[in-house]
Length: 185
Image 1 (cartoon, one colour):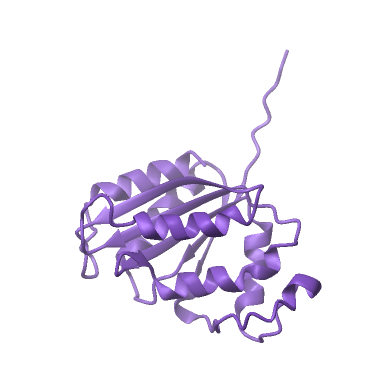
Image 2 (cartoon, helix red, strand yellow; image 1 turned 120 degrees about the vertical axis):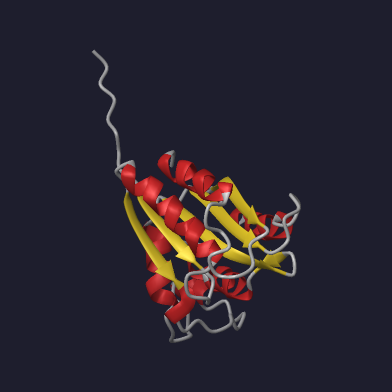
């Protein structure tokens, strides 16, 4: 008789909004709730309280596996390295991911030559605008980063449009979509 073995996955959710109780973070929380209820090990890291400097482009990390900048990125990079699944939650600013997320992706360069574990990447976005194409550039930007990691893929995205102020997302259908996506990781 064939027995299926269910493996719990390490899920890392990175909330990139600097605003407390942001709409994108509400999506992150629902994704986490779904993943947790499915028995996965889930951790959330918020950039709100992190010191993350801009990449200097020195490429030292390509040789050493470590960045020369002394800030909070080593903590995040280690968690990204060890996660099976990474979900990025970002507000959409000017039809693109927020600057904090772009800086985080640039600074994740030490992962490039590593034996990273992540395979499935998700993006959870929220914006004041509600047209379907609004998150397209943010998703495309993340796909560019994923392209540099051949073992990884964009596994899904969720968009909550028409949400500006804190709490606008309450009752939004995208929350249920994020929850269900989290359950199926």
